[in-house]
Structures are given as structure tokens and as C-alpha cells.
Amino acid sequence: MAIIFHEHFMNSNYAPDTAAREGRMESVMSLLLKQRDYSFIKPETAEIKDVLRAHSEGHVNNIKKDEKIFPMALLAAGGAMKAAEIAFNGEPAFACIRPPGHHASPTSCWGFCYFNNMGIALLKLKSEGKIKGAFVLDFDAHKGDGSINVLSDYPEVKILNPFSGDRKSYLSEIKEYLSNIGEIDIIAVSAGFDSYEKEVGNKLKTIDFYLIGKMIKKFSNKLCDGRRFAILEGGYHPKYLGKNVLSFYQGFE
Ligand SMILES: [Zn+2]
Image 1 (cartoon, rainbow, N blue to C red):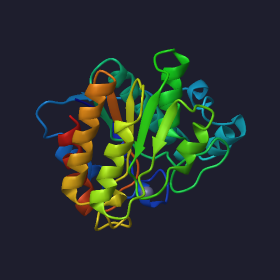
Image 2 (image 1 turned 120 degrees about the horizontal axis):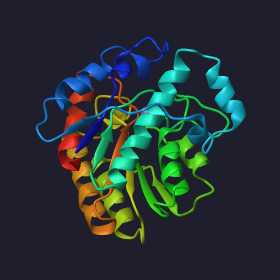
Image 3 (image 1 turned 90 degrees about the vertical axis):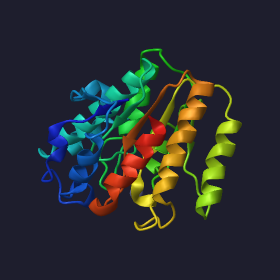
């Protein structure tokens, strides 16, 4: 399993928001880097042409005005692209990146997001003719409105933001959806750990992230030669974030 990470993501000063908060990345990487069978890969910054597949020029220019946010947002998009590429080539990948992206729409953004990392990654693979159909599981506590908007012209990319009220039915909803999905070429996960029972989502237990990861692994093996990647979205409490990411990683790897 490949872990996509760049030391610049440790920088907590790129924005005065919760996703940039100190302790988040430390919480995750201190545990991930102890795993045995991982390869550690540094992403490159996304190019503007990659971002423009998902966003308007006006939006890119707006983000560009902030000289701290802009390079971090480009690097995060580059991290998602790298994870998608590695997954396409056969090795599962997890991109530990920030800022998150799933609330970034073609011409606007909110919720600590600037560029839609997931959309940029999938549209790159599509532009290269590598994939047609894809499945995006977004298990963040908040609906990934940006990803839905960015990918709305592509009905062959199916997005699920599970909404079931308790953890058992939440897991069943994912399983049910994947059991009936039809043809896909890759599975992509917007991994938001604020759906944890002690964060704002107030729903999933640590073991559930493992079970979701394992389910995605199983279905990707069945449906698309194991091609799967995940990118970090929300999850804000350093005390819980690392252990929940690790739990997901252990099921997903
Ligand atoms: Zn969230």
C-alpha cells in the first residue's frame, strides 16, 4: 500500500481553519509511518491545467490571491492525483493530504476546502482515457456537495454519501449500493473521519472504519482488479483522527 504524503502538509499556518489545525497530520502520520508494508511517496504539485478540469478559471484566480493557501491546495490536489495514478497501476493508495476538497465546487468553495481533490484526480484519469466508470464513497459526516457538483456531467461516476442513521444500517447501505453498482474501473474514497462517534458526525466506531476499508478492498477486487485509493477529507480531533485513519488503513490495505 502506498502512502502519499509531503512534509509541507505538516505546516499548520496555511489557513486559520480547523483543517489546518496543528496536531491533525501529526496524529495520523505518527501511526501510519509505523506500518510495515507501506511505500511512502511524495506528491508533486498539481498543474493549473489539472485543476481547470474541475474548476473555472475565475475560481482558480480567486484561490491564487491567497499565497499561503494556493500552493497547499495545489499540492493536495497533486497528492490525490498521485494516489489515483498509483491505484490505477495496481497498488492501493492512501493520500494523507490537506486542505480537504469535497466542499469545493466548480466556481465556489467552503468548509476548509479550496480545490476538489477527488474530482481533479478522477478527471485526470478520465482525460487520459484510463477509466470510464468510477465509484466514489464519501463517508465524511458532511455531504460532499463539491464533488457532486464537479462530477455532475459524468453519470458514469457514481457517488455515495451514506445517510443511514445508525452505524449498522450505514455499513449495510454501502454494501447494498456496491452490490448493485454495475461496471466500474476504480473505487475512490473521500475519507472523512468526522463521522466518528466522538466527532461532529456522532455515528461510527473505530472498528467501522476498518470494516468500511475491508469492504472497499473486497469489492474493488471483485469489480475492478483491486484498483482503489482514498484521500483524507474531514476528521478534526487529533486525539481520535490517527487511530481512526489507521483502522481504515488496516482494512483497506
Ligand atoms: Zn466533514
